[in-house]
Length: 479
Image (cartoon, rainbow, N blue to C red; front, side, top):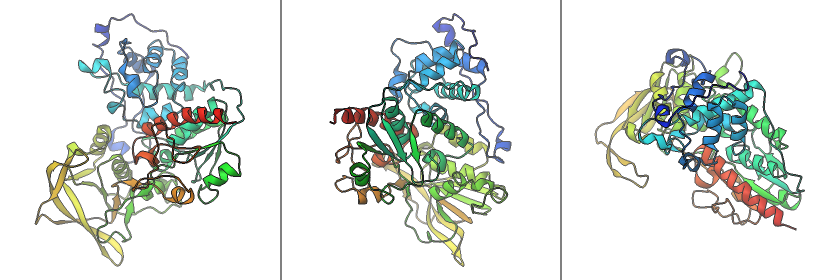
């Protein structure tokens, strides 16, 4: 790829809106269901330029407000349309330290793209696909530029958790001249990006490249460091000299359903299953990895969110898997997973058992052999705004499965709350924080899933960004 492809055409807005939105090239469904390579193949430079030309550069761009990290969307798209990909990358990196990640896993259809001004008449500009293209181009061309950093302030800031919130917070604070250290409990940085999201959706080499970018900015990362056990927050601040702390530990505590048989071998939380497959490379078992994974022929994944889709699509790729079911108690319309992920799962042969709810797991000699289910019907909306599922009497049936993966939600790990006196949390264990992330403890901020519960990568990044700005003001005001 070249630095600049000077192919900008002088088009009227009417002509721009006649350009059809470009589909993302993808692996064939029958092929990709057998491998863990990335499903979308990415735009070519020519496709990216044509897609960027669809942007009318409106005077009131709502897309920026729709982005939790306020990427300068019209500006970076203008540079793509001009063929100046290097400048487009620099524009992206002004506000987003993880564009290659966001271009792959963020729900742009619910954020920046849904408010695109041309969407009232035609399909919105493919902002996410263009973001991915620019980030990939920068990495492939090796023209990665480190932003100018402010002079050192002498302030030390600790960031707990190397997930999206922590990485974003650390990157912004490093730009402002602070000495930033991330403390990560696992043996690799990335949080949910490395343990939760599958390789075929987010290749781990991309996460490593984004993390390496932050390290080049001076961010230090200590892995295998469990705050609350290795050191407490009080020790970090009172003994180790950190002026402020950001907590971005996510929501990694799995919820189960509380039905009989959950202790059988073969019943997994989605967290455990995906961590084995992603962080510990279980998908390469047994030839290139020692991580044990379920050798089942029939899998059931319980839930309808993105985590459930990730687990089901991962199980589908195991060479010994013959059937993979999504078991969800509501209908297709109520599924919270991204439409793209549901569509990909359908193409790959996953079977959807909708309006269906497990009632118990059945075992033989301690191992799962089947799952009893009950059919449901939808009543009036509940507190979530979705129609409440109601059991249908006499509709029970048995589904033969040797592995069941529960993806019905996650909570917060209580370790930091228990070891940090005065840190206020709600009844679910989520840390209570204001809109900037400030907690009840002096000098301590928090953001992402640990505050709002399991949500999206980009929302966590937005929280990290807000916290960084507030923390900067706080530490600079300290004597």
